[in-house]
Length: 319
Image 1 (spheres, rainbow, N blue to C red):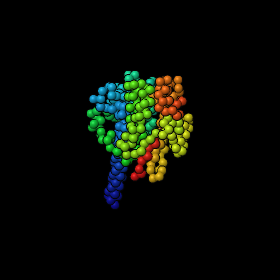
Image 2 (cartoon, rainbow, N blue to C red; image 1 turned 90 degrees about the vertical axis):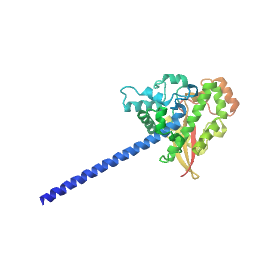
Image 3 (cartoon, rainbow, N blue to C red; image 1 turned 120 degrees about the horizontal axis):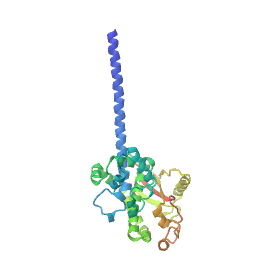
Image 4 (cartoon, rainbow, N blue to C red; image 1 turned 120 degrees about the vertical axis):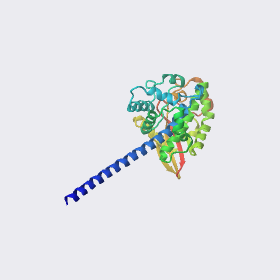
């Protein structure tokens, strides 16, 4: 009896260890899968929002750039003894609120200006920072990591709100790069011509690339074609309240007539104020003259930094 009891006890202990080991194995597998999903998402955010201005390709000459290559940015944050937590905290702080004081690449600000704030959720910013710490982001490493992320469609593991944000930020990055290039080449007045002739075609090209509808709307439009409808103005007003209260802006997803429609904030920055700030104070006379010529019914001035100028609206088929 005693022998049988001991054998049974040992069998129970072995079973318990097996269950615990199995549980730990499953937990490890779930952690690995979760990390893989985060890396995939971070890679897609970086490719659509960062690489437009910070391409890792070495062969792009300085004149063709609107920002330093991403591996150079990483090199300025990586220093002897820095921990992963410190790196993530520093990069995240800059991405949430870019300022000259926080910037590590002072020369880049002289050459390209201070980058605009990208209205990304804190969780996405954390994933970007962690990915940059874990990967050197040179052209060679990026090629191995997966250039397919730049050419494939939306990651279906994302929800509609995340996909819409990816598309809106991709369009914003392309417009921003081209606008900065126009200002750098010919001055701020030329930016008005650029917006008048190139903004719509570039936005449409990005919409075609993503196979969705993308537009920018405002409660104070420059182009009358960009006037927001009732639902869009309602969300713009929500954003005005959130920014006044110091809250995270966020976004909104609605189902309208069988389509999934996402709303994403457009915030002003220093570059925006050259055309959308206060006349005389922020907007030079030549730029004012060009605005009056191209947009006689303009309402899009008087903004300060970090204010809501409108929203991106992304309409997707429901799948």
